[in-house]
Length: 72
Image (tube, rainbow, N blue to C red; front, side):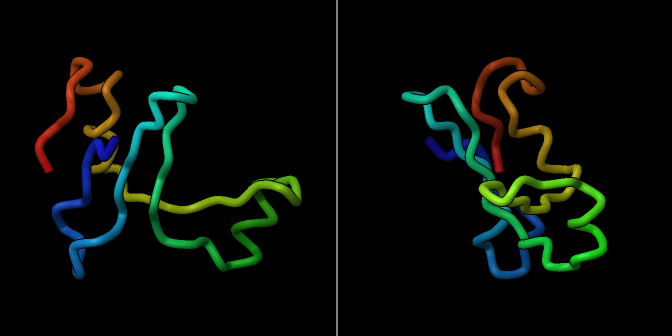
């Protein structure tokens, strides 16, 4: 389920936050972190990756907005 999309996205497609209610997990579509110096600081295992979203997107998490879906 789509929870919210960044209203300031230049092309209107990303970042976006989704909830997989079958697995009870969040899916985050964002900007790929390609800077190896930044990635190396995170200590990511080989089977994981990281994307970046702006802080303003936190309002779309149900735990922050009172459990509902926030308006984009």
